[in-house]
Image (cartoon, rainbow, N blue to C red; front, side, top):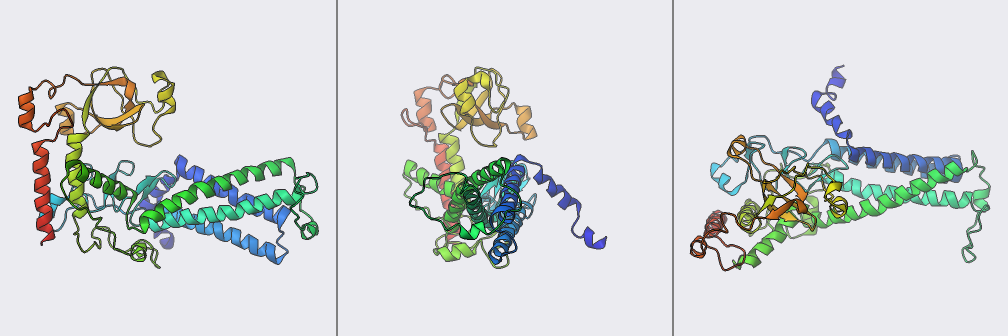
Length: 442
């Protein structure tokens, strides 16, 4: 009992609940179908175990299955690593370079982001993956990427077995018309299948072949996307932050030079930051090796600048003109809205006529933004944001800002009829620039 108690704890049992989600159910079902059908096809119809080649083939199939499940469950249950609740840097002066998380009641360490699904600040967060029902981050990035590599390799092996099984069993029943393709079937004919290759067996093999080929293509593409960011020592979120940094610098013509701080200049050095012989990545998830021209808070300062810029450039007021119940695919809002719903797990927000929303982004048929709350709701710390149909809102043309005189607008920093460039925002940028310069000079 003592031995079991070291493994079976309340926390471990709670983590098992991650399996009760559509992502792991589908992923494990695909793995089970492809691996079991490949083994059955090999043993019964294609390559019996009483041959050397059949035994090696069977061992390889088991090996693929074990390695895939090992990395999959490690990616799920090891997790990305979380910033401790209420975390603060040892040097209190560094808090001015960090964002504060109201949910976790602490500061976000460099490279960390808050995940609404996990409800925690995640170390070196890359994304929240529904297939493992967990975030991909600092601790499980290597396991997740290894799974993305092994799954296509194992499915490719299974797909070859499915194709050869159907070909060998249907060789004498169907004329394929391949006059130029000659395959020696003498070796296959000497093996007597354990049972006839019936129509249900053919249908099951064909279905498994479709799953194997689809997984090989889809997961293989995800692997190359992950490797593209790993060899640059980035995450998907940080790639997006870098793109927004270039856009901000170009928009305001600040003359800054943004250098991504975590690219060590060598693909091999970047690769070793994630993949190690021990399986655990380097570092503790708080401090990171950086480029010689950068410091620990180069990226967090850039995030603060982008956050200030977002308040100026992105938030446009909209007023709800139709009620919306928060449905994911609302058929009552039109066919285009129904079929063009955002393919994301981000929430939808219900609307009532008269609600005010600050929109930050959107598509042709949907918009994303924050609902303006009452003072009582804001004191509680609530924040309601998510997607809503574009047809349910209209732009506020006569809000407070629009009713101001032209002279007031100029005094507040509006320039012409273009997007407002506020003096308050300029002061924020200047303050952040001075902080970053002081920090770089020590």
